[in-house]
Image (cartoon, rainbow, N blue to C red; front, side):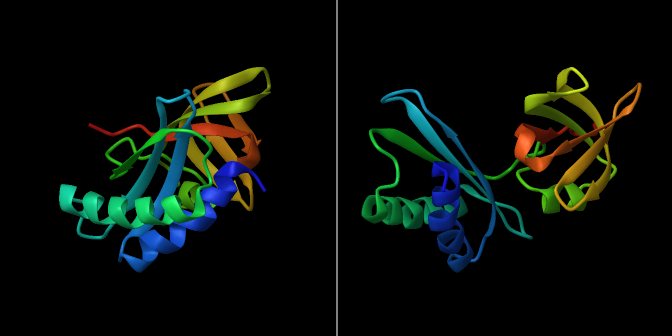
Length: 150
């Protein structure tokens, strides 16, 4: 099990028990400056107090479970307007929205994609770029964010 999978397994129930939607996590290792960012959401939006509530719950769990070796800073945040997408269900939820995607491995020579989410079939995500439709497996995903429509 990957470190991210283990972190998801620990953090997701704590966020849900606090009454929030667990959106996902990003772990950015950088020695003693490492950052664990947990994204939460709620139908009424997220306030600083909401982040603090979840932060205390998550911090206590991480102190007990100790899944990350070394020092790190915990950040709890709303997903914001440029919401990150972590799984196929989230891509399905935002079908038709414009996204910016970075992949671990290239699809047709491209690792950076920008376009609209055109289709989601199980773990396969299709993005309609200006010139073509590119399909990748969710396991190839490094990072994806909604591009806000101003």
